[in-house]
Length: 306
Ligand code: RUB
Image 1: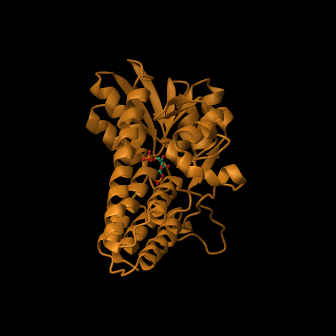
Image 2: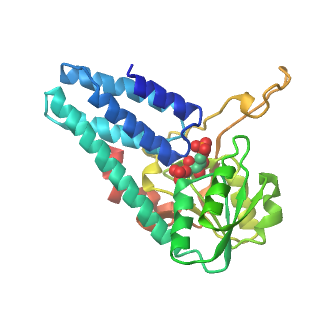
């Protein structure tokens, strides 16, 4: 197995690469390196290498459809081409990787433009964990001269909220940092909730960092709009055909390193927020209702269903 692919999978597994978008970008980069260093003499051997890498990367984190869609896109382009020369197939992988990254970057920009319009001057926004898509939107709002505050959660057990808090301070945004269990005490003081997503299901539910569903419930109770800020390609087509999105369960050591052996310690990384609690999905196509997401996907990214 290619060393870069192995290292990338390990970094993803250990959360050294974190967040759905960064995970997908790391996997795409690994594919590019894999292709460029491939010694495959035949088309068949080259495709076998790509498929072997897919198994390793998919296993690194289970709840990452953006990575899966990106990798599938690259492999399908190679499988669908008539090219037999491995050198040409390497060029094809490079081209596909670059195109995919370009389109991801364009989506991120578009989402930021759309979402920033929902941030009113003087508002306070609640967020959870660290989503590069959400923080980019905050940066955009700031760039547009908006004044707003952020309340962010620490996000146990891996503390990704600290990344958000530091980024916000870097932007010059007044930020309040709380433990997740304090959410209800702060929900009445905020205007909106923005969270990222790792997966979108065909029914319009989102899967995001553990704790998101409870935050959505509290937002509903306080009548605060709850938005998921997400690229459409986090949609998992398998959910349309009945599969449940798998929820990654991480090591008990992340929760309590030296917990008594007989104690059951559970550490699910994500939870499912039902569509009824979601005001809208802020995505590259605009603000869409979760109920319409499968149709939007069919229109914008039909290849995902092939
Ligand atoms: C990160 C997380 C983020 C989404 C979206 O969890 O839940 O909200 O991945 O992030 P983890 P982005 O730290 O376990 O990866 O908007 O950057 O894709």
